[in-house]
Image (cartoon, rainbow, N blue to C red; front, side):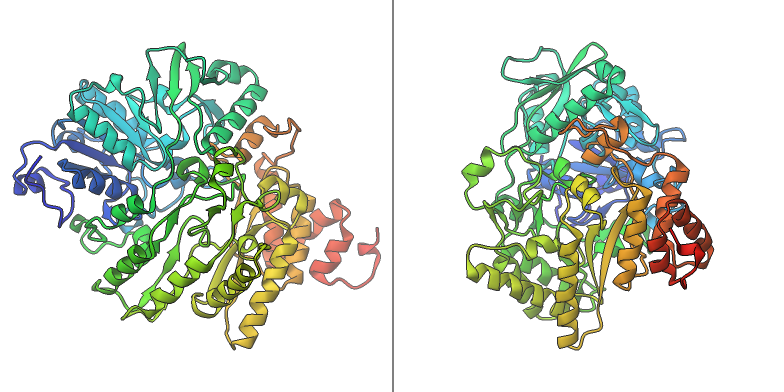
Length: 611
């Protein structure tokens, strides 16, 4: 495994392999994204981790699946295995809007060009590779394979689909954050084991030749879930709870008469392990093959720094904990500051770090005060319905990173672009010192780390809907806004607090959206940062959307399904637009919400507002 240059990009062509003196790669990765050698992109991270372990790793970004398949043949047969990934997003979220309409651009492609990957690349790529190289193992990873590892509702086809293992030619899935899993697969294949012998590797899923063991959990079969949605809802609760345990159990699901085995998630990476990943020799650049074409996703993160992984928020509509886990893995301060220093040496750097963040910007270095309690917990959220008493909410370590980053030579400002959990920042603490520190954190954040706009995500104003979302009451947003406005005034800053909201979420009715419109108008918002709920695999909200049942309570939950229902809810966001005014007024009259009609449009007293 010698002769490997770590200084430059992983090879993408036979010519690049020849320059390295390789006759054959050990591992060839196929990705639905453009190749960007940056630690924010999964294929680059996996490639660099395997390279650091001594393997010859090549990558084929966005292969053409519609021609003579030359992209799938050009690098030949790898010595160990092919890796396939749809990319940084589920391909269907990447391709289609919440209304199932085709998007016109792709942020992960050079020039933003659409159509450079198929629907379900994991399925398409693996089948092509298996046809061409039937004896070479195929390992799937990334968001698409990870979140489709069990039977799941597919919104774009509006049906329950089996595990992606059943629809693809994949031998094994490495789900979640895959560095240690991929290293173990590579090591054991390199030592002569066969792919079908790799049955005990954590964070993998595969068709098993052996039946379930007594200590394992057997889910309802795919076929039984097709017949009874309540069984699918029961499955979801089990999968979510086991995925959120420190040490979950092995899960099994029968599909087409065969057993799929899903091994538990790993323990979170240690500080030393995650530091080692970010210390790898990333160029932080797109591959030269793209010349000067802009890649929108790269432009957003080129000067950003990821501080941690994982999220313990457990939001009903979010996939982060299903993929990254709820336990936080944080980098050391030295690792973070070293990356900031590296960014200052980039040719295009102009003094501004775009983001010191993570899945939730202010979960850095947080977790349970007593980890033994955490190890016994299966709750998907540490923040809902109330903040866990065992949760350490001390923001001092994050505050220190902010201040140290701003001291680095060449840094004008280090901004926080990721969403901030204001409920966490304002959480009550037993120790007055922690409360004081968290007040300092909020002040430091607003005064020195906001690039004109601070993004937060209250998501709704209705407590009923927020409870289903696993989000705090909107009253907490009002409290945070008062702090934000007060600090802005005191520091003579002209900054905006930008709230994100979702329409058509399970449990949300048109009346709830009308009330949202009135409450946000009262706060002087003309909403821009809004979205329709999009069901994605392995989220609580998606299961409610599909089954009509809350998996934990068994309660029936209303969800907007038709295009008309969704459009009417979305319109409430934009009541102030001339083209929407009359439609919104008519809907409010139909709902007999004359109180909201008056609040929104300031109508004078008259018969049109009488009940």
